Length: 483
Ligand code: NAD
Image (tube, rainbow, N blue to C red):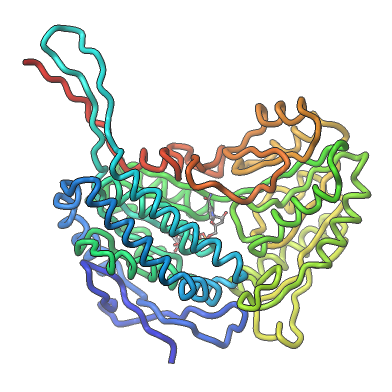
């Protein structure tokens, strides 16, 4: 019997009002149900919102260092449970053990970081335009916020929203993605064990319509922080804006890495391989377009194919190079894009087939795919695939490469591989992306600097992580004193 878990509402684990549940499956072995979670209703979501609203004043007036102490203890609790959390993450999302351990460590570090930040919220003091006056600002919590998260980083993303929200004195209702709610559950168990007061953070599982949508509509919700697809994020932003909620959406990407002739081609291949096939290509920042100068194009394609064919694929618990897709629908979507690319005239150099024999039989495995001869206006170069598929596009010079890099509706992460300083600096200045890198993969983020996208990758209202991560969750009050 799989473990059955509840919603976390007002400090209690409880089933949905209908007692309905849904199954979470192991992507490496779809016959294995790893857990069941409440298939909650709008009424369950509203109860969680009420609990969060009731807890708001007390949590907001709790001194910052005390709030920080709870976050610190929750991070320590997660550290003590790191192996459990890592294995739970692998079993529901499919990523490799190393990738999962890195993600859990990220959540631990995020809690430690914002535990400290809770002491430092502060404000500014300015010179008043008159005698016997004081002029200053103070940062206050936004209030009660909704947090809606995707399945692909099911512990790190909830952590990077929850920790700054709680540090700043907000109360929270979180909605994890249904493909991977089990890692988020551990985060809430850690907060509970750390002594977080009842109602301050709540988690409700279920569909986007019954749990996600009410968070964007309810009058008591002051802000919505969403990460997920551009399609859903657009609806979230529009709905939340109707009632003038503060809203932040971080969404999809179609991230380019430019390879110039001065690059070491082997290094470029390592960078692209890690960026495109790491986490099975299921990262918003995954490299999906290699824009390669014609002088090194053929050499690059040949080496990239060799790299793709060397990727060891298997169950995440065995810690291969690449695990399965998270679900059958994600696998099918990748396979469909492989067909679309071929029908549009791109050349499939390697991979793109489902693996079905032996240990692959019951999992959602696909070989990493490399396409050459891709035009940037093909769907494979414009739409987010969210799988291990790399489109290699030919550029006839630096300006052309930059133009191709920017010729996308997305703008999340972008990198260039070059030894030419002018190319590197010009790229950093002109690329239309929220994250720009030189000689690095498009994936991989530091937690203490801002993260977010341009164009359709983000509402671009606020950034996440670092100091900027607190901005979304605070309001500024300007104070005038006359004595
Ligand atoms: P998704 O958009 O399908 O779902 C995201 C969340 O929204 C889920 O919890 C879902 O249940 C919920 N939801 C669905 N309908 C809703 C509605 N009408 N109202 C409110 N909530 C609703 O995304 P996904 O498949 O879980 O995740 C993959 C996507 O996330 C990719 O596009 C990826 O690029 C993106 N992503 C972006 C970032 C980033 O920081 N930019 C990070 C990770 C993932």
